[in-house]
Length: 455
Image (cartoon, rainbow, N blue to C red):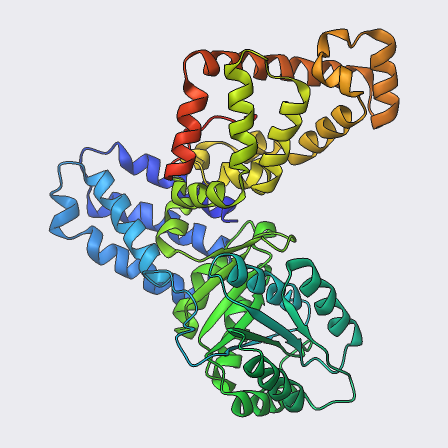
């Protein structure tokens, strides 16, 4: 997300950083570039105008013009205004009500609403330690009810059954009554989506809302629709008292216009970002971290949180002990590292959060893709346990067999073994210098030392 915007803004800001002196003219030129970058990112025009005016007023003020490092001071102004534009601080769900707290999900068809229900249920269960019940009030699509039932089983939360011949209000009230009797903490109600906003849809969801009085009413919208995402959120907000927005499919959105427009147009906070198809691909929205990412300064805090949640520390400790005993790093360990990387969303997701990545051209970033990691894992899976433990025995006929088993060429095997040898060398150095032990201590304490992944 934000790749295009980050690249354009990165160039403009780098031009300003080294300036010993800023004038109204070069500020004006820089803001023209920023304006174009925002419009190309599909940010709504009124939002762009307000943003540029706020930055201009602060940029020509004494704090920037008279600063010893005026370029850096202007970067800070742009960063502060981006944070303000997106809502200043991240806002989680307000579930401090008499249980069960009800969360009503609204949105257009195809926005990923049902999947988001499951993602949110999983997050509430695992991160917030809540007992959750999910229910589908979408009586128009039997597949939606079945989909939610399947997803509820996957994430390990309770599913309340519903049928297409029931009234959505009855479905929701019965589910809440069931949750009360079982002393559950949260009920998430999925509602019907439509291809467009219509009176029938709004009438139905208004009836459901007034009957259940939810603690949170979230509008789920596809971020790739750009300005339209903000417009449809505004239309829903006029019909329903929305408490927040969930932006989905942000991993496929290179522009990021929706994230920058929604708060300004609706006045409602973005609460979560859907960052992939898996049920754990839901992130809390932090305006300060997103602004930092847009300006190419990375998002190390989110990376640390993700590592703490998704990296298998026990497995990594086991490998550290093994290396300490001098047993060496083998292909089974290498495969474990590839899987850990995959658990964190792949190399692309990690690179997005690393500082300085905004300065790397998009063409160079696209060279590092997760398909290569999938291929490498397939190659290792096609080996015998003996070959994984002693890669030196993998010669001609063995390579041909492994290539046939994993659907690759022999040269792919050679390349993978070369990459493994480099990783093996690095791990040997780390184990001698105690680097791996430091990394594990850091991971437990909150800051990973940066090792352990095949970068």
